[in-house]
Length: 480
Image (cartoon, rainbow, N blue to C red; front, side, top):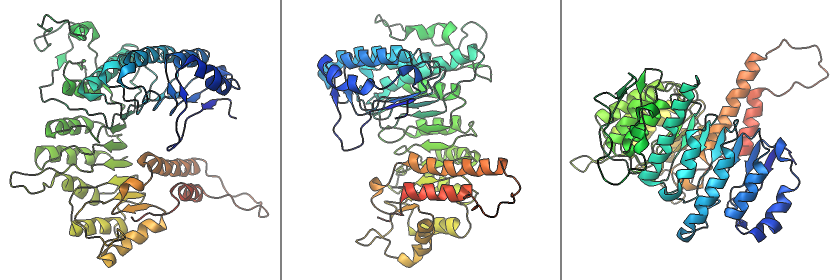
């Protein structure tokens, strides 16, 4: 048992514990908590266990002494509640996040797959407003919708402002909001120049008789300034709110906002323009967005060119249909940029559903195998790209892709033409290569002259260790 890590999360396929009632707390939760001194804890994992107000109260009490808590995972803890228990979920959320807001070193929160929707997101949003230490936020598959996501990113904007007011840089570097049914509206984004008071560009307060839940955002005191001396404030419009947050979070390195989020060309254009100012981007997921040929694809090409540290890119299903009913070439232009440049760190590339065609994919294969443009690539997903496959999911023109398949097999990677749902999570694959790079960097920094001890076997190099780790993690190439 590691005294710094409390872990009762459940793996996929295992039914979670029901710990909603006081009786369940006493019979199930208490024995699990008993061996641990919370004052020593740095990480807690409750994911997969269904909790309620009673268990949230006990967990909060348990975590009170955990002053050094750095990670808290509460994924799939409210997914079994249903609509009838919204009140209980809200109370449980308030209890949990009230204790978490006291953790000044908390850097990583996973609150995914809780299906809470926009109605009960406020306790989370209130926590995020003051989460100055937070670096990684995962809110996948919570049914946030546009309104819920607006409240979340408004809170992140406020948090960034508080950080700057305290002389700090916003710390959030990873934001994952995939699969949340976010539909962003098309309205202009408002900027407010910094002069201490609202100017002519300041949005006016709502004129409706109904009190706005966000009326306070029209108070200029809560508009915050970035390094370029412009204010990016919270907004009542989801699209504006997202742009404001992304502008404020200038330390962002990973953004996952694709997959069941309605990202139309205006929003994709906005994302590219904002993210092009972030040269340290390492991961982007905009799956199922729309990148048509023209200004939108031009903006994405410019952004991708600037991301020299890119490790993971998912632009699956981003193809649009033009006026003649033909597949557009926007995503192909992005892939072309990657093929024509060096990608020293790119480990994961998902190009599913782009209708690239066999000839274009052959060009990509040459860039990988012959030109060595992707030396660290470990996962390439090419499903639904107009490549004829046999019954085994292998290209019928096997000889044309044999060199590519061998390339991935030699590296223990994944080359997928069919059945991409069966591969491992992209984060694991990208992290594996990140570990390899870190070990190589450590080896370079700590290199020493060889010692005269021939009787001892030489230790494995960092590359060998990373290769072993990758082999254990990935097991073997899957060509489905």
